[in-house]
Image 1 (cartoon, one colour):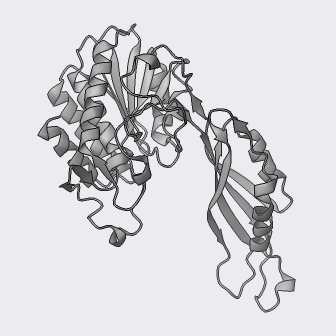
Image 2: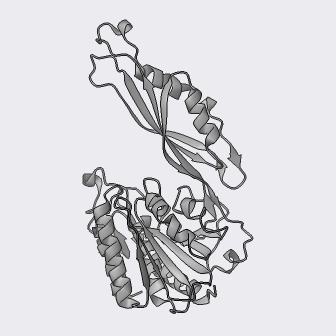
Image 3: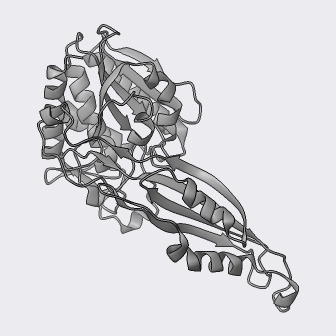
Length: 359
């Protein structure tokens, strides 16, 4: 690992690429493309045209008929709601104690740098590609925008370098995010009997959801879950609220149709909007390519979703693994960091995998 590699990671952490803000994400895609083309001018570049969800695909000029090893990384991060709770500047990219500190260090800018280093070192004749996406944290929207380009590649395998402590993970649950709304009738707060309280309706639905939702269980992925993450309703205390909403995050092990139907069938519910619908991901533990990877394979899935949910649908059954530097426990957390030793290990491992890839 070179000082330039560490410097690139620090620079990426300093860039505030928060999901939903396309301009800084597009700038980072441009920065990474520039860095990679300087180190490997033979790389071919395809840029997405979606103004809201940019993406970039870089690939070697190898025979286009040969199967490609695809590295897929997102450049966005979750927000920092309370920077004052951090011991360091969350966008400072401080280098201290063998770590780079800051938002996105583990999720997943270290993975981006390790993948970029491997692609830059790859032989031009090796069929390899790096997909850089935006807005993964809010539903893999950049990957969805890039899906058409990926579906045109003869992909042989996919590595998503999210934070796994450099252990190979074979899948994760899907995600179904729903905005569930109730409707009431406004009235003065002193005469609530003249109105109909939408908040109370929503509370009634939420009160029976845990026992009523038709959750399923998968031997590898586990049991489905739900989390009412954002609740809103009403305007001021002295008006009966005529609308209320909850955004529910459900992690799925199969198609989410039964869960969606449950919410829509509740008598109090006026409307349900699907915000995110990503399928689960799973690669067989006995896959021949997985057996060649120079890292331990975990017997459990990742606890988070990744762009693999989108990419797994367009790569024709190719094996997909989540495998990269970083500590899952500090993802989205205060004082996020990544160990430089893990970055170095990942860059070396990815470089080795690409060098052995025949396509």
